[in-house]
Image 1: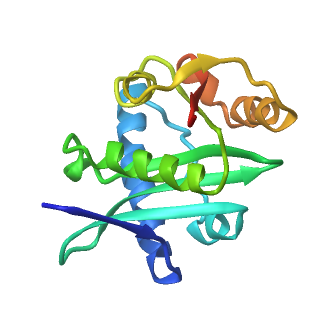
Image 2 (image 1 turned 120 degrees about the vertical axis):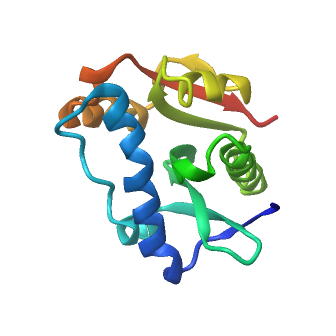
Image 3 (image 1 turned 60 degrees about the vertical axis):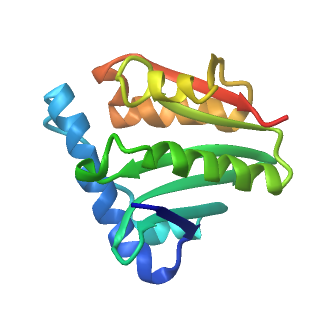
Length: 167
């Protein structure tokens, strides 16, 4: 089926939150995590500076989304989630590429993200798309490391900063 990618609307917000919580079960299972944090409310995502794209199959519900933050002149891929039952079909890649294209249209020359370095659907997935591991170079990116630590995410494996050039 063809994936249609578009900017999210207010009517997508409940679905976005459900998708993230459902997709997070993969992390909970992989890490046997008992205290995994719930997804941020999608309404809060929608209010943050940046954009949300959703992917929907023709004639069907939204099956995934990507959230790009725009902070201090920097584009940061904050979240990519696809329903597990729709996984491994290229939808995450399509959403990521669409978000990178939108970031480039908005004048960004680079996009960053934070991820688990060794989970196949995290670090290796982004590396196949051209992201490379880097060090957090701005105050905003360094603050994300602190947030991850406060949430306890580093207890489950090595976290990595990755960037991709859009030029």
